[in-house]
Image 1 (cartoon, rainbow, N blue to C red):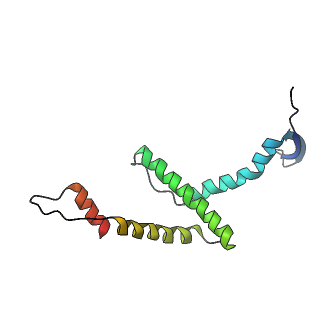
Image 2 (image 1 turned 120 degrees about the vertical axis):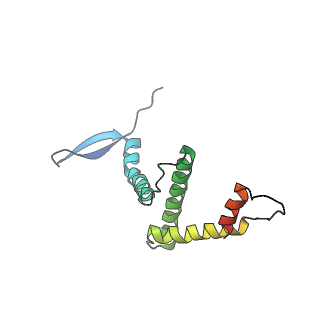
Image 3 (image 1 turned 135 degrees about the horizontal axis):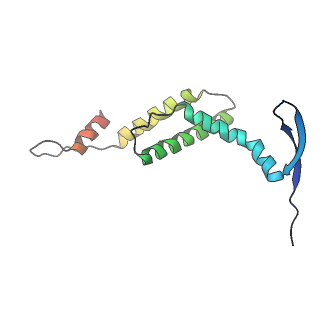
Length: 129
């Protein structure tokens, strides 16, 4: 048996600025109602976009996903606290907390030996300072 699709009446904006009533599937109406939030989230994630021109593709994907997670957590934070905190005021303490926890968990042990230190140990030294 074939089920009938449910339709909803929506107002369409025409090019001349007038409104016209039309029917569309309920799923489309629902999508159009919530798509503004998704667009806003994308817009906010791109505000503090890093310059990734010389970056490997997987790093670009990682940083984009990280920024999406940060923006989503900022939105949840603002809703929970019932106040609008600027995104930058949320990002800076978050980044500082992540860096300090990374510093604490990074362990560098000096090896006694002769010769120059490896590239890995040199990079760990700069992380811990």
